Image (tube, rainbow, N blue to C red):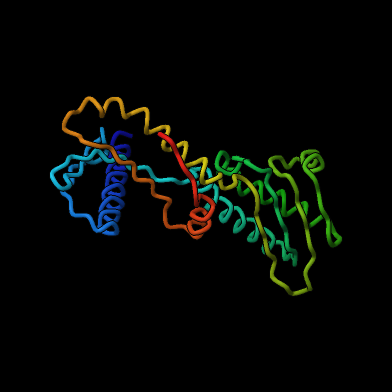
Length: 221
């Protein structure tokens, strides 16, 4: 376990270095870097020592859930194919549900129960709600919809729902407040003339949208 923690810390530090070096390059700044923990990095820039804290803004629940959504969809599709069912099955998880991340070992029996229920539906357009599904022994779902396809069509499975993207402005404010708690310790270091906080949104398709949603945000710290 200690080795794994050390590896994770090493990856974190590599990410910090990459983001900070990219920030300096984009800003056209030349500085020497000293990496540590309190703060994450010290920049020596134009004769000044600047404490820089790095924070990557990402929703961990979303990051953990997306691979599970894809994996469960693949398992369910395989179960439908094994039964020769020309069906399109849509599975909806409740908003903010963390069921997938908490029970990855249950995906196969879970997908089998869904496929068996879909096979018994017999008609097109069957929709089952949360209470009905619980009564059938399928927990953790908000809605199950089954659509019959043309004979000979390959089955399809679609898994939706779960954690949703948080408000970017709220995430930024939360990151700033959490880092503020460390400033008093840095202030005692007379060698630091100022403190910077580098917020990284990450390279995701939603990043441009998040940037627009935070345009004009002002924070007093």
